[in-house]
Amino acid sequence: MQDVIIIGAGVIGTLIARNLSAYQTDVLVLEKNLDVGDGASGANSAIVHSGYDPIPGTKKAEYNVRGNAMFDQLSRELGVPFRRIGSLTLAFDEEGEQKLSELLNRAKQNGVPAEILFGYDAIKEKEPHVPKEVKAALYCPTAGIVDPFLLTARAMENALDNGAKLHLGEAVTAIKPIDGGYEVQTPKATYQTRYVINAAGAYADEIAKMMGLDKWKIIPKKGQYFVLDHFGPFVKTVLFPLPSQKGKGMLVTPTTAGNYLVGPSSSIEESKDDVSTDSLTLAQVKEGGAKLVDQLPLKEAIRVYAGLRSSIEGGDFVIEESKPGFLNLIGIDSPGLASSPYIGKLVAEMAESRLHLTKKKNWNPFVSRIKLANLSLEERAKLIKENPDYGEIICTCEKISLGEIRQELRTSLPCLTIKAMKKRTRCGFGKCQGGFCQARILEEIARANGKKLEEINYGFPDSFQLKEASK
Image 1 (cartoon, rainbow, N blue to C red):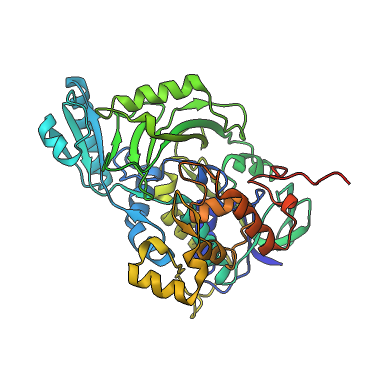
Image 2: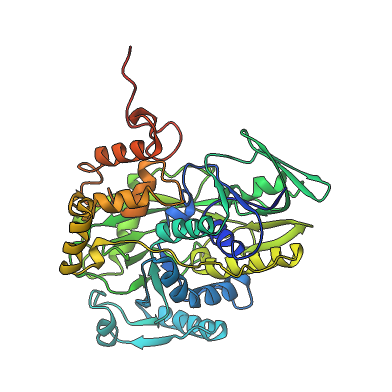
């Protein structure tokens, strides 16, 4: 019997697994997709919110601020890019200035450092690209940006290195109580466990229903984005409009990779899997982004994408042990990414209290990588002399070497799809969107996993890149 089964390998599930791997316990993570972080964790704004916006006294307010404070240490341990660049929430009239005062008061209640900057000149010192019409801005210096792909992957890898287990492509179909715990069924196997953690994101309400818990309903909210190339100096901070009932609104932000995001839109969807984009909504995103900067350079756009936020009525996070040994995490939408380090710690402690776990003496919190872009010319030359794979550039847009690709294929975390390799290394994220490197990546993944080229998916099941030739 397992000690703990975690359902879902998004950023929340993987950070819970990482924290639990610090205890003497058997942890199994079940993920229906072919990689970790293929849901909301892989399609969001990549913002570590400061915490000025959530209603004081809510879980969102507390967990956002606590989680934000944990990112410096967490990113160092996992080798994940993270930068505190600050955010500016812009107002363009007197009514907007009044709303900023309300947000400043909310920030103070939440314990978030913040100040209001008045006048274009004062705001321009922080962000040169704001439009001249701006009257005031709420500046929050603790806001940051992170690589959510690597955060999720490295958290899971670190958990695996410390003894956890991961089964990809294995959806949970049924759960029932048994003596001493629960029986969890998938199409591939039946497992027994003392403790279940439901971190299934958009499908968390359906997992809860398997246990007769039907009081929650996930409301999928789609957000569509433009991705701009890393074309040179542009915005330095996260730029927000005033928040509305729909959320924090369309933002313009740099990413840790040096490119830029514009979005998201916000629309309620019927499907939990529909991440399509459409021209009408993207036109609205363009209009919203253009209000935040002097000139929005959409000529630099290299792709669009959409992600789904798992909202619920009432709005606040649900984190509770709904039945003895069955813990639900439901409605973890924004600021879920910013809150994730604290939620991972909190849930692990809840499981520890129930199961009476013992801390490991030899737990290793670190993940290390060779990243060519972070090395000096002398260091690169030495590395290439030792391993010529690092001298062969496979992705010319993002400057990723064969050595870095093969490095990912040797870790404890399986890399089974082209999309998984993109998220680990950024191969295919550049201007050509994989036009020059994807075929080589396909070959490397197939070789490392002992598969035929025709067996490798782009991302999801049946998204094969090649068809087997007719015999």
